[in-house]
Image (tube, rainbow, N blue to C red; front, side, top):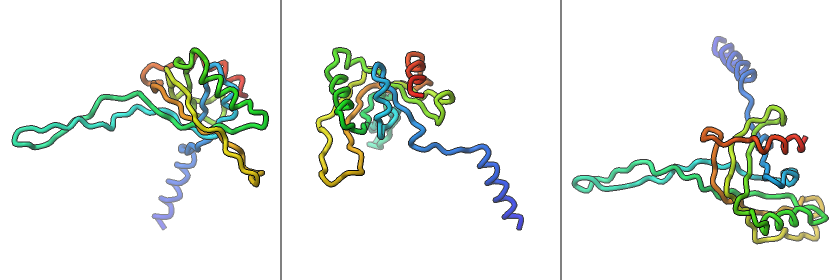
Length: 175
């Protein structure tokens, strides 16, 4: 019986202090193209990478290693929902052909209510690429068409000084 009480107390404490995140909690906003955020179906936030180990040999050929340098370069898959008027593809084409495309900034937020969202970080010097238009399906009348793309750029999290100041007004427009 004591075990049951402990389990119950743990569950109550967990329920009141821990609320797991779901995929829909993450929001991506492209600077200058804030309304396109409404068409984002799936995306990933960036990450600092340090998975490369520098390996070297020591005396008598014994191998050892150390952590490699922190990498900021990310290639993130993004899927946009297609629309019947081809507006989404037109905006994506505009982003790709814009003269400032190599300076694309994309902010990532997390939360369920815009006023309470936390800022995660920014992809800087990004480019948006895709090579395929949506696939047609004459029998698919309930599935939303999607446009697969990739966002390539350097990830800077809030902990490294990234600031959401330019994106906060745009977030208000998504309410």
